[in-house]
Length: 202
Image (cartoon, rainbow, N blue to C red; front, side):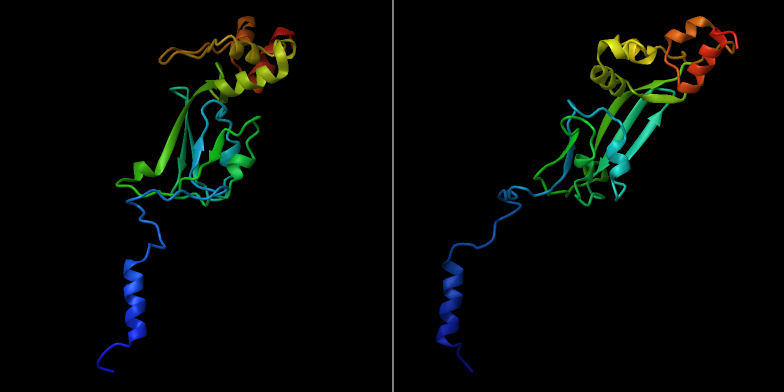
């Protein structure tokens, strides 16, 4: 047919002058509905760097790096790897989730560094063998849950509560022998058992 049908012409003109059915994203905001599972963001008030979310993540979108020399733990959450399943939020052992899924869904950017978010925690290490015990905030949280009476029976909990971070100084030779004063430093279970065994004379 040489000329379009009148009905088709009418529909075309109606579509041109009608209100848009779709949003103008990214030029205008297009908020996600309630219950939408978007980019996970950590809650610094509740997150204690305990690794629970990392263990629960099925897509390995949460990477934990422990720097024993600097006594530092870095947690990196990669949004471009996340499948937004919500396991990190659900498996958090805190009273309030230390990480929460937001309603943000835009993960576009100009560099890979824009596709992740990092957290840094102070790491507590054994003063004898330098193995890590956990983050300072993790020990403080456990001490708070146990209460002053119970936590005082653990030197590590007591030291964490008093914000005393005893660590071997960089470049300083460690004493090989174990003495009674080592009880009042951060120790892993194996080294603490050795201290108690020596204290008892066995």
